[in-house]
Image 1 (cartoon, rainbow, N blue to C red):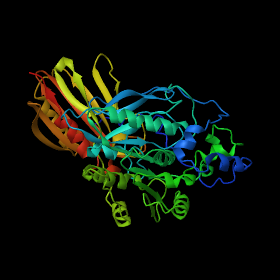
Image 2: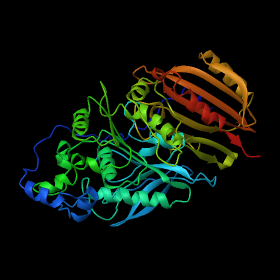
Image 3: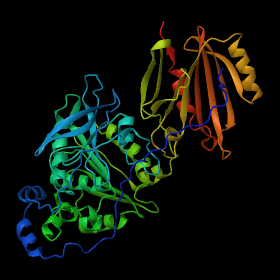
Image 4: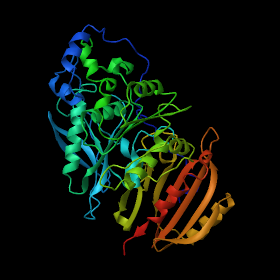
Length: 479
């Protein structure tokens, strides 16, 4: 019989989730030799008119063909939405199936990449939550569009120019969905995504409200190594810099940033306009990333309450500062169903987890773990699933005695209608002496035994208990 009480921790450590950031403080790019030409071409024009009349010149033809992960069923659909240059991929919230029309937010993630990945359903870190997942978790339908040049889409990266057109096309697609209220489509984004969202608000009044985290006023303050356009042409900067088009904002637009991030950009926007549709909030002492986790749930509440004929969202500095003091939340991950046909057993586990067969000598042993190594309970906890054959004697009784002698607290119970034991304990499980919290479940199914063995570092305390319990509660056996 395998020693089921003292498993070793096995966590897959793979490439960590890429975090996209803004590089600030790079003034003086472009040279200004086209300044008079810019004034002549744009004077008296709205941003939409100037944008549509302008033909960008790309100095670099860049794109990618990164694969698109399948989204969790029933949460998101992978769709294609039509744009001026061809169809683009997007994740869109699944139809709730209630026959009603619901509000939707289009969320534009940060960074210069134009693709989508499994980002929306990875761990939403409280102090750096760029996922926008608070919206769909709160019941606001969400669309994550890819843009030209990303994920094998037609076109090339245009660094804040053609991507504005793609955002407008994403709106048109969202408005066409039968379960979306076309009068309650919102737009939001962070960092480069926040700048894209601000430009889209200057281009179109179709969005009910727009939320921009960490936008810049002038593209010169972005990381110029990512520019694909001809940087010798001044008008290329003008077409990508929100500071020149603030008076064209017609939808309620809320700009939020920490003082330690792009706060100086926000101050310049405040000084440059008296447009009552633009609302700026600088959070003292916080960086470029900290406001997202605490504030996006507040914005989701605002959207759900914004049900009138006209937009009625208001935000105060005091509300934002209060949100920043909230206790961090650990949400449950999106779950997916796993089936073990031999036993007729079903259970749910995190969609983000991957299963690896570690069986030896014809046995049955799998480990479930996240492919990421983030400092959180989704990524740092794991689960072993083992099946054992017949045993002479009372296996559950003998195992209970063994576990209790090792300091575990053991309960006799039923799981999925089958006799089981449920044990809690601590174990030192690696060469460095790290201590792990262990929850161990053993279920008797006729003459076979099934174990679920959960581990996480003791430093996380009880933070993973809710996740482990949700898995235990999902275990059923078909009759």
